[in-house]
Amino acid sequence: MNDNTLNSIFPISACSRNIEARWTSLQTNVSFLTLKECVRSKSPGPCDCQTYRPDFIVPDANKLWHRDIRAIKSKQVATLETAVALCVAARAMVPKSTATLLASIYAQCRLFDDLAAAEYILIEKRRKDRVKGGKTRQDRLRPAREYALRLFYSMRPPEGWKNVGTAARVIAPHVERFVTRGRLCVFAGNCPIRTIRGWLTA
Image (cartoon, rainbow, N blue to C red; front, top):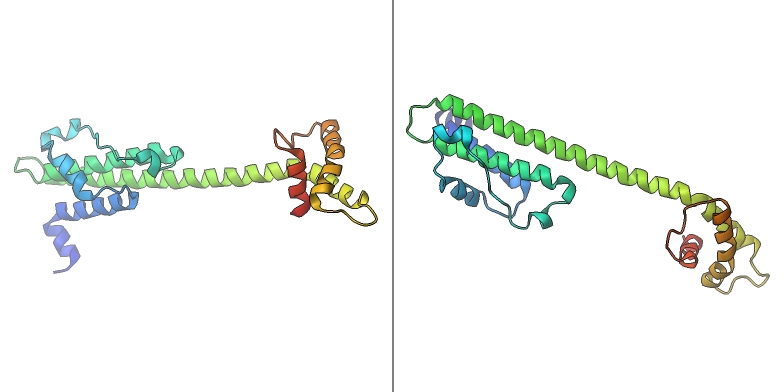
């Protein structure tokens, strides 16, 4: 008997496996069985499904997920808890359309997938913003960095610099004046000598 035949005979079991797969993808460090036991303890019936309120809390969620995606992850957890409640209700021997409950389960799974897509978009946006922010910072630093490199070569003593630290200390006052004249936001609380030394050794 293949999976399709089994799914048609035991559609609730198939739904449960789909929910479990999504739960595993969340990487909550909590077993799916724990979630199911939590839901079963509330004994949701078919008539309770419209008013079911998910309240499962993943321990250490703050450590598991970055704050930018924590809200989406919480919604995904709630979505899967609701889907599990629908599975439990669908097994109850009550005259309620199983097809309706199954449709609701599939809707919860689709909602989970939509949230997963939203999470991916958010992560990609954050990554692009970081790249853009890094490029903007490099563009802001470029004039001062190039000026420091020009001074490094033009002010070099005939016998050469003793070391890069010495060069940075000699060059630093000139670079600071250049930055002040140009109203460039470069050092922003950082030690100018250390910053210039980093430029010279890059």
